[in-house]
Image 1 (cartoon, one colour):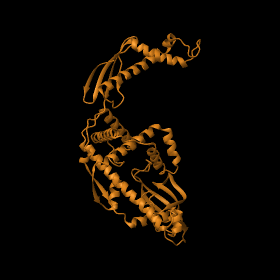
Image 2 (cartoon, helix red, strand yellow):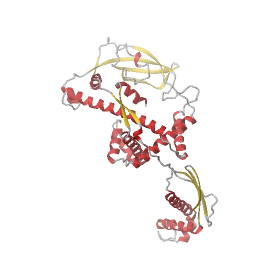
Image 3 (cartoon, one colour):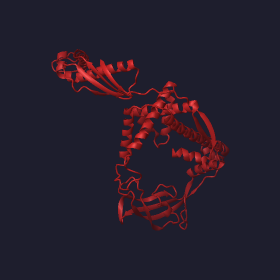
Image 4 (cartoon, helix red, strand yellow):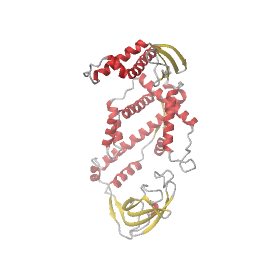
Length: 438
């Protein structure tokens, strides 16, 4: 039973006591459950006397009983006070000895009460744009390139941007070959950006049969620590150059993609691009509303949640900078900015609480279809979608996190239907640049 409490803002410290009799009674119940499946020499399964079970398992049962009874006391206390815990309590029963009353203390934070939010007072900007026909033609051109045929060119042909160069290459650092820096008959699409910056540009202009060097600098954030930020020379042998011949744009081409005609293909692409514009504008409005909520909603924050969020940021920072020696051999500042990160953590906690509470109050739900569509959307971005489905089947925590993300997104979208929206016409590239920057 909880005897006294000490409250400061959202932080609670409560003290209680469990009598020795209550504790032994609860421990005996646990021991009897142990006994139902326990085998011991001289006794049939499920028929081990309680006195024998106490001799062997009483300490473990007592510990479980304390947890059970403390949790029961805390649940009753929380119901009476009409509070909700922000996380697991920190318990202290260090002074307890078997056979005596168990005095304990529990420290915990509670969730704040969300104040009323008058969304009609908020205004967000809805950015609208007109789809340029050139974007439709550009998308069609990309489809044609994806279905192009690479034809081998004569030896006097000079490689151009967009061609495929079939090359042997060997990488050298300080005139010594380095591991993983060589390949034969590699098909490199010039201008694709798949190789180190500057590599492909130096292949352009060469002919089949040419042997030459390419000099580059590995990026500072290159995945191989022994190469990151260092200069290298690649010896190249160009075997052949293949030019990509695009298929003719006609109804037969459109039917290969699943459309009846070229005009139907254009309509299909327009629909896709217009939907992308709508989604980009929606993303902008979401971010703007989040900024408004972070600024306008006044809410006390449980320090427990802030510390958890801050610790995750620290762990991520340490993982990202584990190979950084802080003397300029990594991008950005490798020192953890405690003040800035705490402010960011507080913002994330506040917005998470606001969306969770408001969504619950307004009966926002994540359906089975919502989850399936989100998983399908994620799986479609991978070469082997089956791996994504298996991941979620084997990781219920990941599925719970996904459900939480979808809940916040749906709550935010529902909020957007209740705020004022002011339209602003922008250029398509501006809309996508801003969406990408976020």
